Length: 297
Image (cartoon, rainbow, N blue to C red; front, side, top):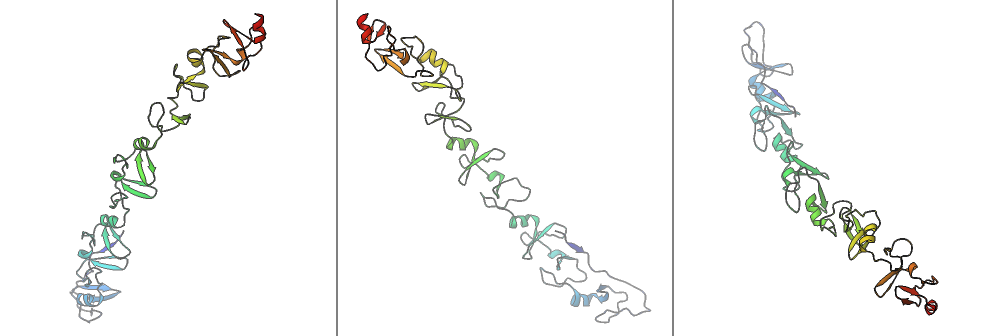
């Protein structure tokens, strides 16, 4: 804030004795003496101190003609009385804060009195110091720490849980879902299969390791396979057509009998081609027949 500093009253010395030059109040002759010009009136220093001097806002004594005076918003001080109310630092040539209650403070004490307080240590966050502001609250940079590891977050990204603040690694470790395959936190994206979360990069074919997110796949004994690898390495072969039984496409039902498997559409009488799924049949060597054809064979 600005203030005005006046360096004491003007004095006047003269050797002219021809005209009367008297103090406005006591009529004492001012020739050759110090005087003060107050509101266009000439006043001796004694009358000035007694009748015209401003009262110091601090010590309540008159600010005499020989004293240096400071004034701010219709208040006046002796130069030596113009000090910070908190630390007593002289403020005649320093910046200062004038509070609404009339107290004068240096910039540092004013900031401490009126400044934002850190949400962690409750001390004042001084202007120009390193700090963090979040949701209209403020912290010293070193006080803005992760709730879990207690390390300052500084320029790292962070997440919140209720009122608590976490660095990204601690938040992921404590709250993120764990991948069913690698058991590591899933920080973004991911897929769900059989009510279990997976990283997209972990959800791959057991055999060829091709990513299966968004692709057709099947599972076998808790492992997942792409269609091609399942056909080649896992699927049973139809005892009729010798092709893999995948469960994909046309004819997903399977017929099993004494260790052999057939596509449902392949389980037909060898002679009359009648479908024998859910019907009585006769096996003769590698061939199956309906009961009528079996009698003719």
